Length: 443
Image (tube, rainbow, N blue to C red; front, side, top):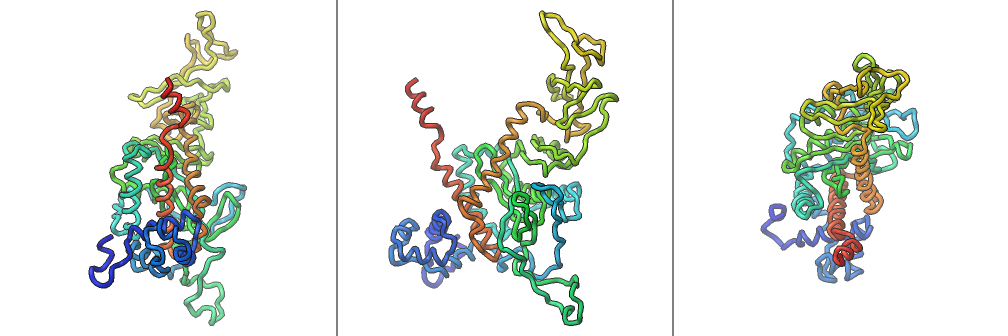
């Protein structure tokens, strides 16, 4: 951070000590910088741990000055204060489900736009925060084997971040004075990057952000965060976070993606197939299934063919070179070395019964490898909850929402330092079980 400070004038506080002190305030659940500055003066231990001499600690203004140097923009927000009124999300009809997107752009239109966009890190206001996080924490976790950057298994999920109990805006037009009370003129918003969204877990509206987090599913460690407005649907939030991550972390190679049913869209599967990424995405039922396949077969909800007799076919391997999966009749019996069909109405006179090949390019959403009916798919998909565990650590363990900030600058600064603490905690964990190590030593 040498370029952030002037070479003239009095010597500043050591940046590493300032950051260490800010990390301690979050770790000790002190959400106010004013209170933390007072604690440093009252408690010599806090000052020593931060790297300061007791009795010579920074004031609250010094902390805010340090945060300003971490933010590479003169504006505390990423959007202008004055903008049109946004469409409010509609309450979903079913309890516990996500609200429909208010954006008119489809995934098929948005994905190629973001894919072909070159996101420059230097153009982002949080570039200094990200550079510190990447060099001092993310890369260290990768070098110690906690994160496999050459074969990332990413889990993604969005979570609501409440910043205030109501939306603060005011008129800047003269329509009300002229008797027009419901005008659509632009408003001045105190938090322009936030809006009103729907919290599906609590079944209520909230004002704030939608934090989309990309997490390494094997270690539960965060990889890349992205703040969106609260009304942003996860279907779009993933794309904004994923393509920014690809631009900012070019050395990371994604091999698997684990997402919930909110991301079940055909353009996702088509893109992942082009990029040789294996998707593990649950079906949401809205995409539909083909009514008939191969003239007389139907497809079950998990992509398994159902024969005309109503029996689910049995998987019999995958031909990767041909891009297809083979399913055979489940009623074939090999008892006493004799092959026979126990079905009352057999579909075929063949010795091994009827077989069907699912060509994966016909419908990459339903026909994927491994299939959703396999144990391999279910075992891998169980790791998707790593994103939820990471979000729980940020919101509950480190009190992300208790920051009570009014600017995106402060929220990003608090968020990135929480991610740093998550990596620090992982470094202190034992690499293997103590009991397992004792058994191996005895053996």
